[in-house]
Amino acid sequence: MVQGVERLRPGWPLVLGQLPQGGRATAKSAAMILVVMRDVVEVWGYGDSAPRWTVRRVPGGVSLTRAGVGGPGVYDLQVSDGEHAVKIRPCDLRRLPAFPMSRQSDFETALTALGEEPRDHLVTSG
Image 1 (cartoon, rainbow, N blue to C red):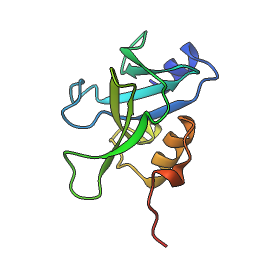
Image 2 (image 1 turned 90 degrees about the vertical axis):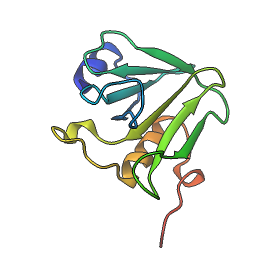
Image 3 (image 1 turned 180 degrees about the vertical axis):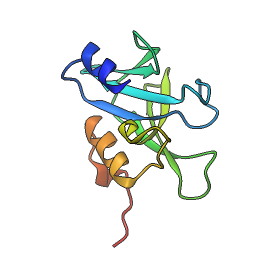
Image 4 (image 1 turned 60 degrees about the vertical axis):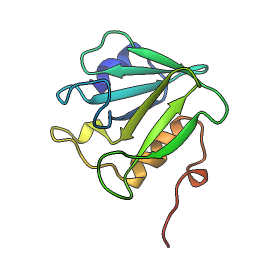
């Protein structure tokens, strides 16, 4: 899946992950990729030959939201333009076949790809 999107969108940063439970995809197709382009973020799913939808990149459009499923301390990454949005739980799809748990490094990679400073969004212990 990752290689297919990379082939169709060479050179653009990718955010790898899965839709949070209750998203637009079925459990089998929960793997998602966001392609971060200059003005929009494209939302791709398993087996797609084109993006499912796009979200315009706007100032303040990237945020972390408390996940509805998964317990305390579980967050999703949201990209919204006020009209369209996508929530994704970042994780490296290359660690499949089983969906891995999201790691802080997955969120840091995703935020950086979206042009955000991770420390503006993440609270670290230490």
